[in-house]
Length: 257
Image (cartoon, one colour):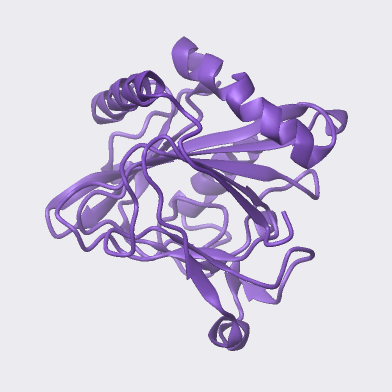
């Protein structure tokens, strides 16, 4: 991945895409009902909408099987040079008006091990209008200067950003040091995408530790402690450009895996 990303077009079958859409709708219903997992909401022009669901792997057998399917783990073995272990999983729903993310690198938020590879699994088509991912070419190693995870604006302005438009069935693998960003969904349709992040198996299974750490951080922010911005967050990085709804004002489940 000399560019920090690898795009596999139509790697999934039509049946797999249909199954994924059904399963993601189940997760969304969990979020609205306060079901298992960790769920985050944002304020949009259409009211409060689900922005992200994560920590659902232990609770959904079909998605757990997909996360470990050879269509995902095969390319990961080639990219990591060994077997892969799930580090975290999330769905960004990006309903109409849903916020994007400032330029950032995942490595600044993914603790406990230096290197990860994430897989973008589009549930809906993603293009420039609805806030697809854009990657900066020319940087594949090491952390850039940043504040709260947001890359220094001078570097951002000098970089060449390439939008990666995708269709359901495509897969995009990208390195945790690859700078990327996304814009607000300015279309009238949702732009749902699942992101699966893995680390090399030799570093161990760090998933539970990651979510314990993130839940503790969000709890501290909700209490107004250790926060530079005093704003609700959905990420460890302070890179979300939408207006997150404070956890006390949403139906977020506090169930732990």
